[in-house]
Image (tube, rainbow, N blue to C red; front, side, top):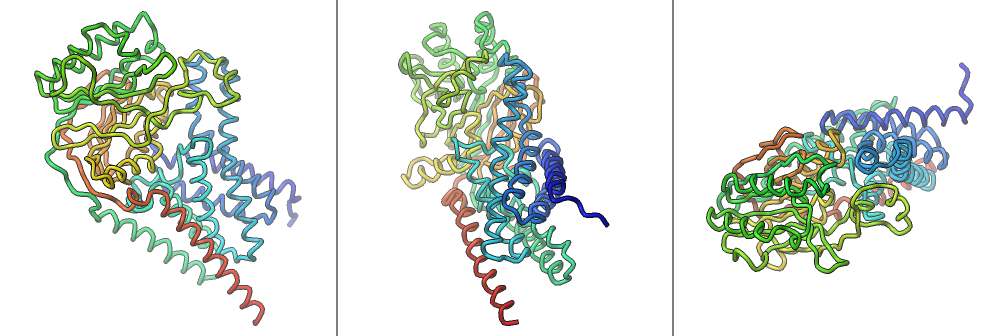
Length: 522
């Protein structure tokens, strides 16, 4: 049998890795075939271990990561081309370059994993069960904060409805990524010819799935007070009209009518539902909403940009409570803290790229990392705006900070978004799945009020209990029970999965030394 030239072998393996990485999109919403991720990761791990060269392994990792990223976040093309006016070829190049940047993290994973395996003379079984899952977790965690973080489609998100979901309140989305990588390692080991390895991998994998299922029965948080009635607005304003000066009056009237259509304990609008500063609104606009709030005992949370100085403005949420004065300012305000690169601030050296697009971009001011909740009867609502929903540790930190300071702790989470930038694409269900993960991590319900979708109510166990049809103008009414208490993830955040990964690497060193000693004395 003719063996392939090593050069062609690594190119073939890279091509396979590229295709396998692309298939990973089917593990996430809206498809939700989470076992696909375990299979694709197992194939990827096998391909990485076929080569002892760090450089070749990195190339395979780059190919896998590029396929994964491009297939999962291709919808960025829509915002750049359709709404940003960027030439189609430039938008394609931009998305491919961005996917290539994200692919550097799987490349780093592959290179470091093989480097450590060679340096420690680690057996493949130890590498697959300890080194690779740990390095995978650490590299995904790095992707979540380097350059402000791009944690879209982290592997853990595929498991909001899998047996691994029970681990989310303990170790969060990156910890679920470690569990998924361990299962992929077990699957790869199960292909080993030695029966004891296959049996051991099967036991480890089954124990992990059983433990995850068992953890779903643990009540980490408890109900707080009485449920509140909520109305979540979905205006379905076309993105090309949202910042059109000729349509501002029409949009203001639309949202005023939707807000005042019916009372509820809480009415919430999408992000920047009102796209102009309060100072530029008609003089009676906010007072009319305050009058409605007072007369119907309705609490309002409204997405609107807020101007502090001519050079400082924020992507904000203002709250109007029934006991607030009809005029004279708004007593509650939440400012977006984690801003979107290229969307809400311009990274150094990239002004030229932003100038190529016709999107109303600017450098927003950052809100504080910890901000107050909005009280609605028995419940304390903590808003977050669009992109902030991707950063679970930051949300968990706000809950922990309130508990530590003995301040009113958040009992309900609220995400205000405008994902119309990405059209009718998989971006909508992907972001809905991200919100499900935040509910799982914190043991609290998550409300989503969005412009075009996905507007939904998610309970404290990450289950969608009500949802509007995307791209329709409608209002979602529901009764929501708030929850209080602390999950392990709230208290420790990403420290647990990172520390566990480091411990696994230390264990890998110990086992590799024992393996070498056994060989020396045999």
